[in-house]
Image 1 (cartoon, one colour):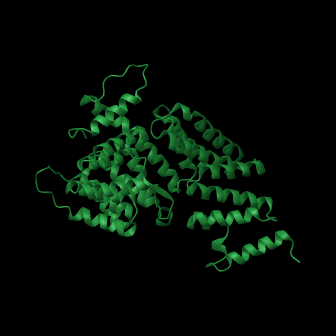
Image 2 (cartoon, rainbow, N blue to C red):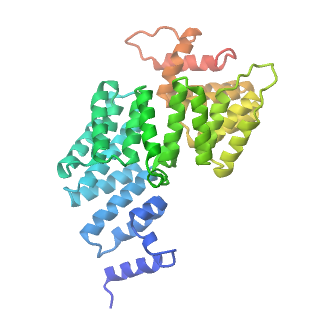
Image 3 (tube, rainbow, N blue to C red):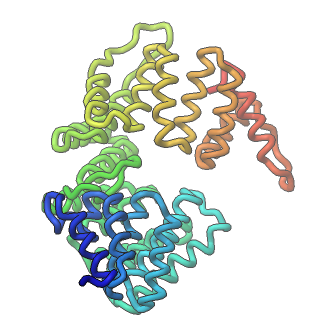
Length: 411
């Protein structure tokens, strides 16, 4: 007779048996890479089984926690890591994973503008990374966590951030993630020449290291390091005014990796290079349309493709269709202030002024970085007067955003 725990484990094996292979459908890193939702389900079955060993329980909590992160279920991920730490307080990886969830709170809460209210999250990320290093000296990813946490704290911490990234690369020089993290930090600090050098190093790494799926992120889409790096390299060449090289870089990225990201970003570059003046015939846009058609054929829901198609339709003065495209893009990226502002402008063109004003105000409320970018324009056009140092600036800023959206001259 099976004991109850034995029955539970036997049922688990029976449930998994019909899959393509048992090994591919276990609570494993392989399953996590292939299907985070399925990994969470399978690891939950392991954790609920009565005879799961302590070691297996800790391993399952690590994998399920990472799956929850991929699914944007951060409270659940934190719960798994903290449960694991109560069982295995000397597990360096668990400390590291808990530190990454604290960093995610930093990233989501502060963006490029560090909020002192996020200091506890920064302290926790650094504390967990330090604990991981005490338990496992020369842990490259712990140094990477220190680097990205300090980078998030602002330019005053650049030296500490770079030193940590340098150490991570020294310890693991063939890992594209270590180089990519430093690339992002250098880019954010406008050290474009150095960042391009890091991009070149990544793109010279063996193809099997930089073409792993879902290893990096570019414009909110999981992708390979090769695609994410190629797009970053092209963008930094643009920022340096090296337009011809940027064009070559976008072309090479799309030819080497035909993908929604490479096609939609090349379309964005094409649009940025087109001069268009109202009242004049629109420029030839067939190449832009072709790139966006390819991107949407590969992923009909990708927000960047819908955003760029919206801009294309604005150039064609098809504002109703443009508003639809911007709305589709916002479903995936609702906190993007620039995208929401474009949606508001399209609504204004359609005579929907009150909706436009509401969207403009929402853009400011949801995206502080975008709001700061627009403040100068609002002051220059007379919509925003000087605000007393001891006054709450938000009501005046929101009134200015509304006034701008009600005035056709303001964009």
